[in-house]
Image 1 (spheres, one colour):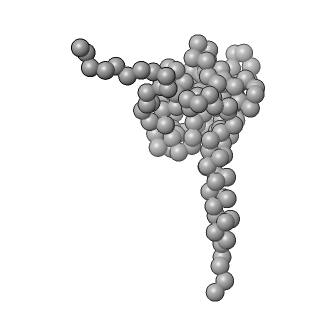
Image 2: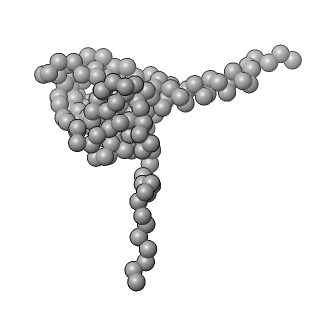
Image 3: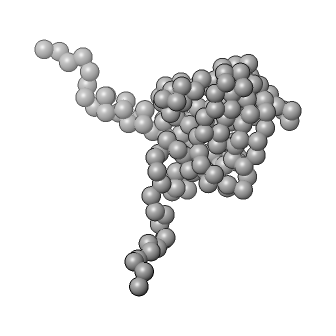
Length: 150
């Protein structure tokens, strides 16, 4: 009987999909792509293009703002889908974003987006830039646990 799919092809396809979903941002070991929390800024704008697709790394939107066009990296599409968060060209948004380093270049990384047109808000990252889709944050390396009081 003839096989329709080569098992190695399926493994490579899955590995590629996972790598793509990890995005193009340079991590710093904490799940934050070179984010400096002090760079958090907010701005309003209208979406001019949406670059979101299943299996794609670093979904993004481009907005026309008072300061010109800005591209903002979001979170995984499954996280947006799970939260019923939809973005379309023409939507008017308020974006809170960090400046980060993506592929060696500065980029904007969404902390929270309020979609005034759709009437929804989604928080992607906490105040330190940690991605909320990764679940609760464990103890940081180098932090000491407090023992019982004596």
